[in-house]
Length: 141
Image (cartoon, rainbow, N blue to C red; front, top):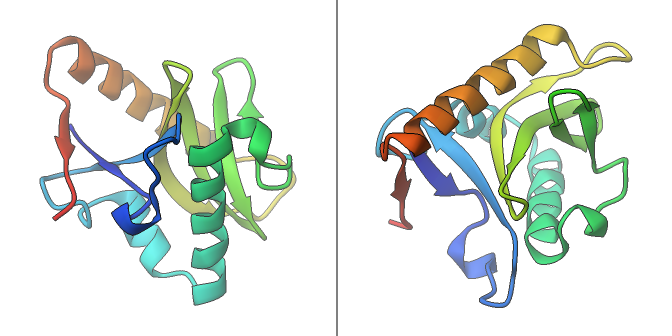
């Protein structure tokens, strides 16, 4: 499993306590469900998500309104970043790390179960890889 920082290095600050990570399928961080979703957004939608990711890195979830970041399944501790009708699902690891799974266009009032299940399955894969020492961090290239 390959992890990467979503916030580009030119936007990161050393005093930030939080990290927002994505998961790649290979050592190329563009080879991920999240990267494919983000690159297909309009520039203002992409900027909205990046603003939320940066704010999370700096302040944690307390720095975001519930319109920007909220729980989508409290029982499984799954969350989502929001921009308009678009969502990026994630889970919180160790309190200061958010791992984003993928993005999607939300069409109803509730987050579809299949989107939640996809994020929950990623968390299971992540925890297994972490325990076996198979998590690799892709640095800035």
